Image: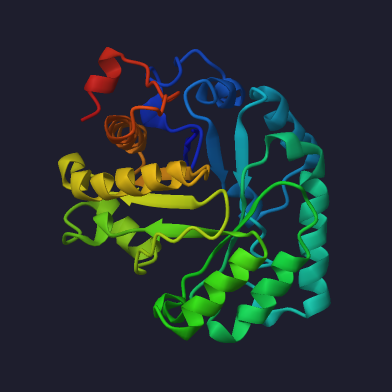
Length: 287
């Protein structure tokens, strides 16, 4: 039974002297991060072409059991509707080639589609999934509300992913939208994070969860309790979940991940966690 926990980044100014010492060079922080967490969501590949040598440096900085979850380039997903299909295909295959040397440390690669991609793009999404050539898992996140109708469109979407052994990415942004935006981090999160229904359906063996926590940590308990039950269910079904925990400013994200994992442990006596946060005076002063 294994749950991969990770953040949306491997370094944050507020994590200095907690997850890693201030004396540790920035280039080495990924190695220290990987001693605590077992995966990371890498968004840099969404925004730009990351140099192959840089990808290899990241790969060599972490242990064999660590898993990177890279996001597909925006030229494949967010610019899908405005570009010729052969160019989209070319960028998708080039991205796969760049990841090929990293396969032994890859978790579910993410195809993240924007809200403008409605049900009319479903067959194109499936076509991209069908082109996947790597042996490692693939996952898909959609943000158009048509895919959350609990009816024909969502059923076609889920069935298509299941037939292709592709994982659904489940976005849970309920916590950050549960109150008015009373601080800068909530204002920013409510502008940037999608407000979509949370449908925790697994379509393959490596379901992906993206949990966006509220900065008032106790408010998250109700949703963490729900996720602990769902994660235990998936574990008992033989699945291996990947859970990426965010918070509105990401400062408290490691703490939320630890709290969720403790809830899983309480529900599942056969589960043995590998997530242990370091303890320091600096950590206590963050909140």
